[in-house]
Image: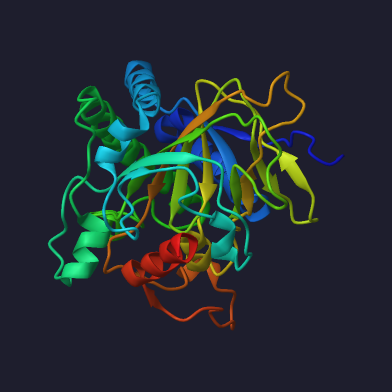
Length: 330
């Protein structure tokens, strides 16, 4: 495979798994296990999310990013560590989470967090970071209903994907259910504006990074490329453009949970210099599905070989995610 050739990220029919016979489900689960051992990226088709809900979230997000900067800043938190609200250009450098010092990413974003608070006892700082109030722009009231509706659909879809993942790991289909009853989930809508001058050395639209939690469900731009993933051999390859489907990838927490049986793959966003104009804009909506704050992440029984030892010690999910997020912002 030549450098930056589009890889064969395999498509999985989620509806076929959910409605299949035990034999059919086992066959699909085995394919998913193979994919998650190799790239950790797959395309989910027949997902069941209504197209109108996806389209409305997409359109309203574009409307938000098209607002004057002054209006967008009304949804910006005064706390730079807050993961919700508006993040202007140059707010973060994702490669820093990998220990790589780079210029800030060339993107802006808008994020929301959980819509329901957990029954868990949290410190004030923990509560504010993971479950604090979402921020909305006064000048774009349609955004809230569009994104909260989409957020709920993604939460439901993530639960179905986790059933598939549990089967792929030779565990009961509801294995992940109790650890995701009050998930620390998040949605980030991203705008990668075109640029009319060269970027700084090592600067990217989104620097190379892995995702931190259980899984990510990405609605990527169906017409503008940019997402790239790093294969085990070390080469960067382009992700394919998909329309009526989602790209799902494994996060660090799930890789740790599986004792590295599954991989959390490095990825980045690079605006193509082969387009007619470098000013072409790219959008995406990334939903991050994480566990409950107080979930303990330790090796899944089926991922421990006979006589072997877990590679990682048990960790509490909430502090783990907090540390990873702050490494990219700070």
